Length: 244
Image 1 (cartoon, rainbow, N blue to C red):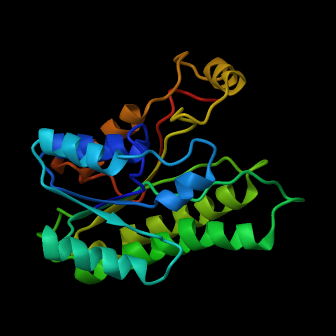
Image 2 (image 1 turned 90 degrees about the vertical axis):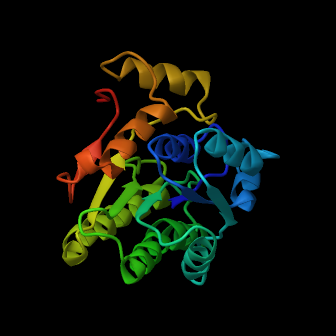
């Protein structure tokens, strides 16, 4: 299951395709009302296009519209996935709420919405995964995407910090199932939100002198979900080309 797969240019879509190429069947979630609120807007036909790409990669797939601010959503998503694809063996969380605001101008409503989606939603997904997991020991995987961008982006960065701790706790609390849990910080990845000034500034701060791509993140997530990645557990991994 890959959450937050609403746009063909997004990290979630790249992760889903990479996992499909590695032999996984894919359930993915999306929430178009979030994209419509953002400057890039919703992408008509994205869900069908992503499903088609997964099919071309050899995967069966199911898409589920999911408002992760709703506490009932994780259970419903897992029910739908189980009915159509079977039990979830790997949970990769790429969803987020991200609206820029700082210490002085963040509203309580915005703060609560960020924590509902990024922190509470993550906890409820992990809880549902742990309750239902029945795969062979050593095959279960949890990966969450995070960020340390807090200045000028207070509710996003703070709620992602909570996501880190929740996900890393799973490495210990789900150890009896043989499930690994890791967090990946991909740094700033241009999926359509960067201005020219931001792109230039990020590139100048990156040792490898280029911007990160969704595929860069997808490669690492694919490895963590593979048999070869099973010894990496309880880690917060930077995958950002040497961003300073």
